[in-house]
Length: 268
Image (cartoon, rainbow, N blue to C red; front, side, top):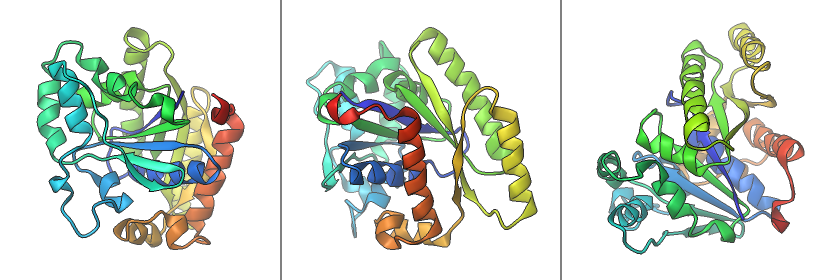
């Protein structure tokens, strides 16, 4: 049965989507069966995966929103899965999630809808990685209730750190009341330009502020324009330019994660 990991931060633009895609792909390359779940109505993970190349993602009819809608209505749940590569698949999302989110806010047992949907596919994968929206709303609560772990992505700046603190408060409330087994796997620092004193100082500050409470991963994902280019091309950074520093860093991060938390999911 899959381990479910939510990538999260209240602030947008901190590498959640990039990390979900590249981390998932690296796990897939290591032989794990990985399902990505786009749970943000912006659909950036869906766009970046390339499944709608040349098309408008809002034309995709079957998404995670349709699964949630069926769950709210008490109907049979079908989870639409698109295969990306041998070890990697995705459940897409688009603007239809915005309407579903409004309905979700009024639903009975609304916090559990995503968890119920993912139960339909958990036995088919080793890891399920949820890309969350930059919010603290009902969709984030659903993601946390459905998850075993949270990986917080944070850029080395004060605004991202502030978002991390707000997220920690939500984590504690959900762990205390809705999902007592939920854990924070750690904080991953992304989009860091370590050539600057400011970035180096912020990284030291993040580690100093958080390491007594949660793990801060040793791997730091560097800032690279090639990452944006790879997203536009619908490829992982390793597929786009495998010797790029960000590609190397995501491989190292995956190794670090598996060394710390990598019970053998292949036999789970």
